[in-house]
Length: 395
Image (tube, rainbow, N blue to C red; front, side, top):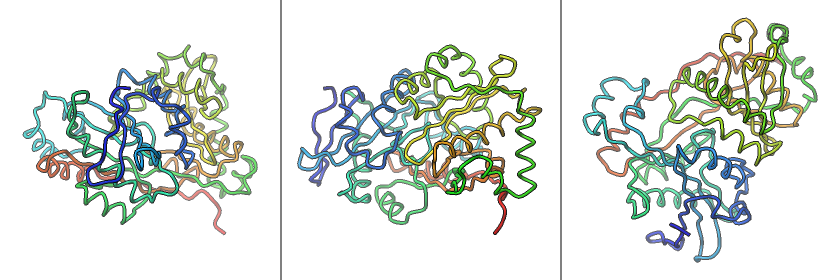
């Protein structure tokens, strides 16, 4: 098994194996420590993601051991290669961007090692057994990332490492990672709706709204009544790959900062592997495919993940807003407790009742001087400002 020999962490009783593909790991072995039922760390999800994105992103998997035998945790890594300009993008002030460009060759690609998932919000980079403290395991992960900086005969040196992404402020996490020379920075919030137990139907949800927002919701449904919804199978997704790719890219043009593009083919693999836990909803008008939304449903969580639409149908027919209400209705039907609507479009997501939850990333370069430059870059990426609406009646 390539790259799978046991490696001992320096000054530690723990060891790990670095593996190139999830297919080289049995589902039983990997899922044994996915104790929080995180679908993004499941063997099925990772298999589907790898099958769909292997031409775009390198993946690595780490299994951690105590006493060289007992599995105590796992970590899923993604590696991207890009030019500094792609990292900087438009949210970085010109003065800081120029300093970075002076240090890095503009034509030489840099590598980014992500502990987590570029295409899903949340702490999706590692899981560990219950008997291991979170802080202890996180320290193991950070030390392993630092070892991977060095590279090997099979793996090139890594330029940057990114731990993505923690839900709330945690001083213990901050201190631990700062000791490992990681820099913490806030990113755009995740908009989350906590569903009430009394919402047995969508009408119950609407009845909790004040008159203004209930009227607005009904107006959205009236204008969007021209659309037909269809839950796609994997073969139906495959039939519309070109249209899906085009619509998804259009959405990304309105995203302030983005490092990766998911290929539509990945949705086919996800549907095959995850079945009912992955929902792909297509929207049609007069038999014309005009938009889609996707969601992962696991445990008591509905995670609204990807959308795409033809914007020419949005203004008059409220397609995007209809998708948001449909997410709420699906979450109620699936008896979910939490609907995660993700980043961006904070104000319109607050109209359906979602509230902002802060999120934080940690990053570092393998060398000290570039890490100082990285601090300048990350300090410049401020969360966007937004207004929050309160659609529900006050008690």
